[in-house]
Length: 492
Ligand SMILES: Nc1ncnc2c1ncn2[C@@H]1O[C@H](COP(=O)(O)OP(=O)(O)OP(=O)(O)O)[C@@H](O)[C@H]1O
Ligand SMILES: [Mg+2]
Image (tube, rainbow, N blue to C red):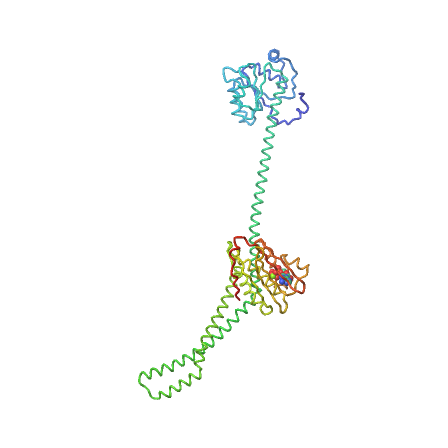
């Protein structure tokens, strides 16, 4: 193969062209110098030797200009290789004579060299048949770092082999550098991806926190909307309880007056003061009839029962409010959707809506459902408040539930304002509201939709402008739950 000298001349000047010649014959060193170096001095002695070693004389392509170092023995060569590595200028290749008495032979030398520098390319120079290829292969292993050059040398062959091995070393080095660069790049990219991942994870956590804060504040805003009705509903029993207590206080006063009179009569009778006893008894009777003691006694039970039921009503409202506003625990629980979600939401909403809406219920038994009661109450409450808001004067709200095809269906219908197609398309968008400022945030349906989706369910709407609206919640029932149908307690 012809060597393109111009191309070689233009090669990277940082290319490693360092070659170590290892031969116990100094004259051979000079021969290599002639073949492989630019300024090869013409020396007749060397020429002679060259003719003895090489089958023909050749013109050396001086442009290759290898940097040569020499060693007479294997041990010395190993030292050179060590020094070269330490100084950061390793050899690209070595020519190694097969026989170098008294020290190591070529094969053993190469074994030591490779221990020091596994990248070193080697050419073993052999004129003897003491090592067959098979033997060499067995000792050095089958690898591509070794070529065998038979004596007598052909200088072109030497040059070409040196060039090929040096190029191979440099290419391998370049490939290694590229690989290192690539690894660094991959490491850098991985690091950046990891940083982005961490940021993303942080953002997701923040987003989730914001979302749950938003869901909770929407819930609180529903409570705000309910507040007037709830306050009124609590006020009612409170006012009749306090009225009852007033009456009870008067009754107590009359009863204790009567008791005092009876006690004084009793003590006088015991002491034997019996004058005028008939008269005093008559006065007592008149007093008793004046305060209508018998009526008071029969009224007492009713007053106490009414007050107790009033306080129970307050207690129930407070409990409903508490359970509605409570943040659900992270763990889902089995729940009775009617008793724990629909009825409490209806009771709370009823405080507001009962003055303008008649609420009709048709609740079929439902299976126990695994989930968070607070979340589902929030959905029902929002649909009920929306339905009531859509009714301007008087109207009906109907809530039904049933199991159809392994799905729980809860429908909330109203005969209020209804919606046109354009409005229907926007209602699940966050912050879409037609309510006056301060009344609605426009988050109710978007949050409700998100909650139902979390349960792999659907929230659908059918509406006709001027006629009314029906929202349908459809929740899949996992098969394990289907056996546990609740009795659908229908309390009011
Ligand atoms: N039953 C209904 N009948 C008519 N329009 C409705 C009905 N339900 C919802 N809408 C319309 O959808 C809009 C969005 O409802 P959404 O519940 O998301 O927000 P909002 O009720 O306005 O405010 P909030 O965040 O307090 O719930 C309502 O403003 C209303 O225009
Ligand atoms: Mg709403």
